[in-house]
Length: 230
Image 1 (cartoon, rainbow, N blue to C red):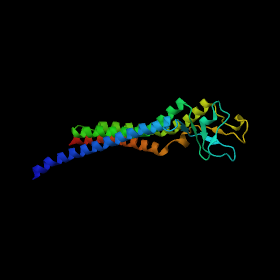
Image 2 (cartoon, rainbow, N blue to C red; image 1 turned 90 degrees about the vertical axis):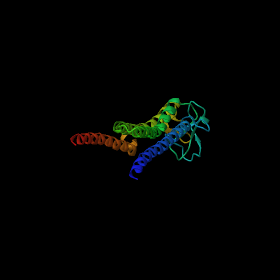
Image 3 (tube, rainbow, N blue to C red; image 1 turned 45 degrees about the vertical axis):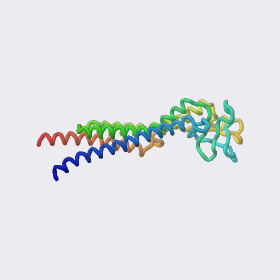
């Protein structure tokens, strides 16, 4: 009876690893699919080809929705502003701004995919009964760095995309740049401020992962020293 249990236990362990591998692979593939889909929507605009930017818009009093910016070098129907929301939607290419938005959109998905890849590497090591502490450290360290980078880059690139779009389109950025402040709108692009605009929850998660990585390395060395004394 005991011998049969000894044979069943490794099989159950391998079955669990296969299930974990299948689930992780599914999550990674689904994340990759949504990354491509949502990033494509953000950059190219699936319906009208327009792209939205987070830029403060100063509208004339009593302006209805939607309101069209005037006093630009492009036709007025290419730039639409929604009153009550800080932002504008543009049909013009503004390639650099679209690329920045694409990167900012894809980075959070990349963190998830990197985590899934790390899990797959660890399960492969466990299935082959090989040491996995090294890959575990690399996985946690990579996730820590990628998470902290995302916390900075995502809000920064979104704001920078708006600034570049405003500059490229030559939009008015103050009341002095329009001929009639009672009927014409202007935009106020915001600059990235590290302390105010940083994604602090995501950044702190990255720091926690980094601390776990450092403690894990210490724990591994301590365990090796202890085993050497036995």
